[in-house]
Every structure is written in C-alpha cells, then in structure tokens.
Length: 283
Image (cartoon, rainbow, N blue to C red; front, side):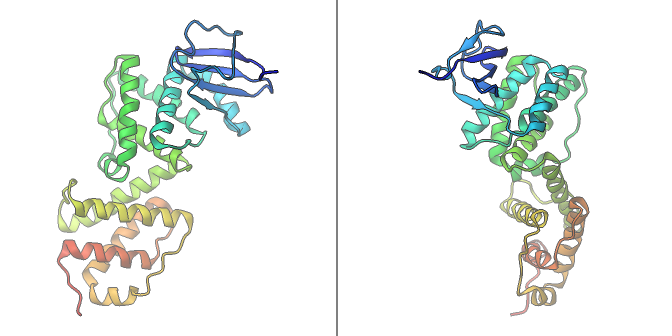
C-alpha cells in the first residue's frame, strides 16, 4: 500500500498548502501550482511531483503560534512567506529554524500595514546589514520581489534590511533579538571609532574587514567562547592609542550585547584600528 493521502486544511495561494498527514501531523507544502483549484477537505498525494518543499513545525509552542497566526495575518501573507522561506532554503542550501514561519509572516504583515499607510520606519542598521550579511541581503532581495509582485507595493531598502535580519537569525538558528543586538553593537562600536577618526568609506576593504571582525567577536561573546590573545599586554604597550580606541568600541559593543567583552578581544581589534590611526608599534 502507498502512503496515506494528505488531507488539505487550507490553500494559502496557488503554490502553498497546509495539509495534515496520516499521523495527524500538520505540514506546509510548497510547489508551483500545487494549490490551484484545491479546496479545504480535499486530498493530495504525498508523492505529488509538484511538491518542492515540505515544512513541519516540531516544537509544540511553534505549532500553537502558527495556528494563532492565521487569526491575525492574512492567508496571502502567510502564503508568500512560505514561498520566501522555500526560496531561502534553496538559495542557502539548508533549512531555516522553524520559528521563521511565524516571525517572518508576522513581520511582513506589519510591514505591509505600515507601508500601505504611508509609514516607513528607518532602519539604523542598514549599512551594517549589507556588509555583515551580503548573501542574506541577496536572499532578501528575492523575498522583496515576491512581496512586491503579490501586493503591488515597492519595498524600500530599510525593509530589505529587516527581512535580511529575520532570515539571518533563522539561518543561524538564533532569536532575531540576538541578531539585532549584534548588529546594533557593531553600529555603536563603529560610531565610537568614527567619532575619533571620521567616517570610514562603506565600500572600502578596511570597513568590511573591521565589521567582519566585530561580528565574529560579538558572536563569541554571545556564545561565551574565549578568544585568548597572548599578546594583549604587548599590544596595549606598543599601540596605546589603538588599544584605547578598541576599549571604547568593545565597551559600546558590551552595552548592546548586555555582556562584557574581554580585553583580549580589544587587543585583536586594536591591530585593525592601528591601520586607521597610522600607529606603528615599536619593533
């Protein structure tokens, strides 16, 4: 005997179905044309060739949130969200954390409501997001194109940034609040440095290197991972200006993360800053 047929709970659009399997487990199916003409209560074969992606929410709390989502978010928004998640999984080559099914749909609904009302929210992390997560920025562009085609509404870059943050958090399997903390910490650390040396060109290799270093430092701090630097005292002695600036940056980073940043991290950062300050250590 073949596998039991899926029973259709609801069709969100022509490409997305919510179904229930033989075991009673709810699944999300995504595939071109899979929902065309399908009604609730109908059936679809588990091996239907049109099925491109299947998603199951394993955590009971996420299952419950997904059920509640249908009471506050339009079906067409949930539908386009599932298409975006399937796109992202294909582009990244791996699955995203299941919390994205709720968090992203909720965000897109709120963003559409704002933009349709003529309200655009400034994204203070925009430049950092572009530099920190270039792959996710491209994924967000594809997501924005889907939303624009569905709702006939142009998304500004500020919204692309927010989409990228949600996708990045799900790709890293961390809460979006943690991605926001890291991005905000990097922005504040850069502000601390630029208050001394002036603006750093956002398209420069030096800026990209500095932001990348800050990102990995922040992730280590959030995970409680030590990054010991046996040369910390020597760097502090030989690059005093750079080390002092690095301490200001790590203090700003710590304020956002809510966790102390070790002096060893400041020492590594001082070596980057020395390039900007033109400070050369004694041989």
